[in-house]
Image (cartoon, rainbow, N blue to C red; front, side, top):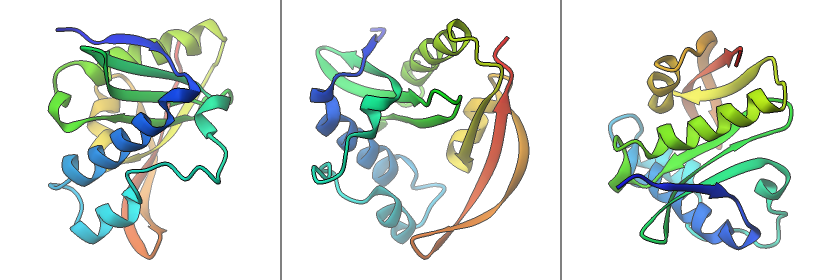
Length: 156
């Protein structure tokens, strides 16, 4: 069944945090150590003392059977900020459907360049969609080194 893609609502915050957490903790085992996953994923619960950054971004939610299964967000400057799906739907077209919505919005807004800081885990997904690697290297986050790539796309 194809996912339903809809705009983000503030009530989606907890679901998105859980998707983010599960995608990292369960979906990146082949790329990251357990300590790296734990450092990146944080908590499965949102930190309600912090503002909801997705409210200020263009963000889409994928739903299947009324359940959120993924989300993707784009900042107004063209930064692809968040792109995560739960492990059960990885490889089933959910991320592609979210990406299609993101790309359509970028084009509609007249953005001439999209950027992302991509993990090894997401790089191949983006390369298949025409993104190029502009620079790659190790970056320190929370005391762990991650191999990340600065990537870009001209969404013409």
